[in-house]
Image (tube, rainbow, N blue to C red; front, side, top):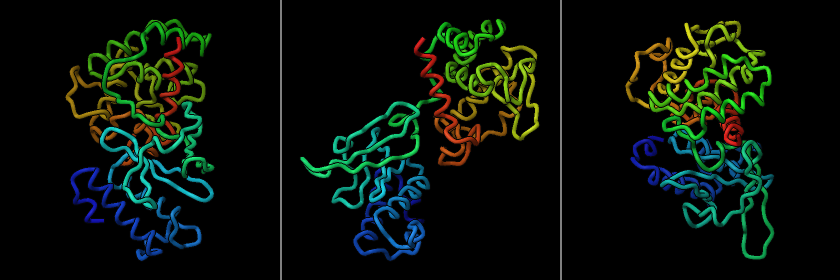
Length: 303
């Protein structure tokens, strides 16, 4: 893999992986690591696709694996767009126009249907929930949702929400703007972490002014506490900024765990989930953590 790490661009890395896997596919396999991916310990298109998925992760290239009982494909993000990587064909990347997407509603299963040739039948291939599908959502930027939309959402989701929560929601916008972080994403994260501010099964209580589980790194831990709701939201925004980029804070740091974050390790919402982050960092270990945040945000935007 030393050759792969020495390459400078994603296009070069993808071409390298393509040449390597096509050789293995055509020869029936000469590298011992490819066989480890097959259930029967033999090289096949499916086992090689699994190997390619691992290689894309090692190379830091956004990708996911689509499988069926008889076939598998890799879909990769390169040069600003998604494309199908299919080493069984005569070209490195194939346009998604050659494939049909079915049921891409957020949170659902993505289905890829490959057109084999005009008039032929299709292969169906399912994957698990995939990174809000074909775009990554940056933590850095301006909010799409307004404070009024957030307030309307939480009143519907939790009819018993305290008035103090309604009153503090504008801080998500103002504190986010101060650091260049999307406050609507921070609010959606708070809804996830607190059970829409019911604090049911939550490690923190409303009196801590900690609305994101900051400092809760193990079961039974209480996490950090802050003097006011505004300061609690500020600390959350600062912690998100630590993951999002390398820019300095504009306000004095009050996030007690800011220095512990690998700066810039999760620039997108999807990568806040450790399981979905190619670098193995993130805010939470639960599967699809970032996608759950985005699903809440999508609901907020309907108000």
